[in-house]
Image 1 (cartoon, rainbow, N blue to C red):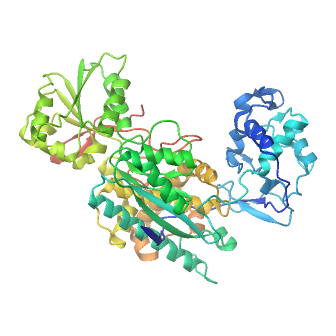
Image 2: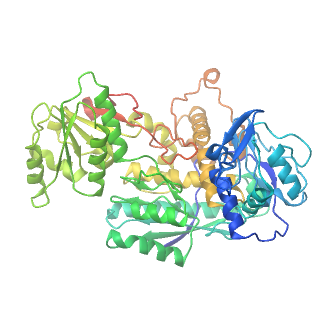
Length: 601
């Protein structure tokens, strides 16, 4: 299924940028062996001889090997970054060798409006060698002392230069002059109502985004849309084309199906996505093809080291770690914990992680999977028969299984349930179970998140989207909103590695700014969403000017994020944006309250 569409972002970051140079000269292609040698120097800090790359920084601090690798500061894309007050510029051939009158913008420092790098003459091979070896740029100035001065031979220098020349030279697959292709993956076991809600939201968001893009490109267009000033001037904003990749059949065939979709139409990234089972084939496809996997809604993300996949959290495995930490921090931890779970990929992953997390502790863990040869109620009764009074029980159950506990009485002294699997505070816990039950809760508590999700709910109302699954739908809303903001900062530098790097850099700053903007909205107009309904979303320039003074202005700035999670952040190499959870219980009136603080395992 293909969708053409757009997104009007609830609020938009001010896109602030600095200037680099465009690659405009012909470069003689280098041998693959030279590029490979240069790649090892750049990424791994290993010289062609196998010896460690060495350099000296801050005058006399020697770094070597992986610590000295160029990628640490200039990143895989070669597009650089900002580290504190240090601006690490792009060093790809496109930026090093272009004539001074042929320029390209690169977003570097979002803190200072319209800060441009000074133009410099194209680097020559000799000038580049002097910069790398001596720290002297081609204007004769000394480079920052944090930049190592490397000892490279002529052969090693030639290899590194060959690698830089081919680094991020062209747009990534899925990008054209006027369009960007994306796709969303849905696995076959997803419930029809959730599938329908996901597709409807994406269709609406993309339609709004493309309508905004069309308006923005008209001469004399108003700025009351999501486009940044730089995008307007440079005409870098593109139309989104969206495919829905619905997988079918056995999991063993999903990889082939993904490859077939990709051969038919390459995409720049897989965005959002939905699965109640394994995400491993999708994760593996993205790592293999180097396609970003951008914040899917999945119960059990792949937790192995990843380069190309971002997730909201570790899902049920995070809940397992939160529970393990909670139990071990108690003055009197339980002697025995019994896990009850469905024998599927998600249930096994959750149970395995909790067993691993409690290994070596005083807590003895026993596992009991639900029997498939019995009706559900009988299978649950059989599992409860394994639990003794005084035990602690962990139930990795979905809503239909929780509801089937209605005719059974709790046995354990304390029962824990998964909010990820059980539909959070809407889990259909029987009344007899609530007093002894706790939820592992990796979201912001309901009362607090009302402010965080005010714009999301306003958008649902304005767009006539039914609320089917608040967690999933708010994740979809965030994923496409954040994609819009990140692409705006990238301008015309549409490289997949750079997309990931910008996300790592932007997420915390973006969330902070949006919280401030939404706080201003509530104070100024009294009710969340009034500004959006009455005036439309704030422009980029307006967002960049906002300076919140909570104490002096009396503004309520107690919310910390704009999603169902308390706070999202990423560091270099991090792939899980939310890293903790609560242990929560039901109080009078079925109000969910925290029994623990925010636990980060």
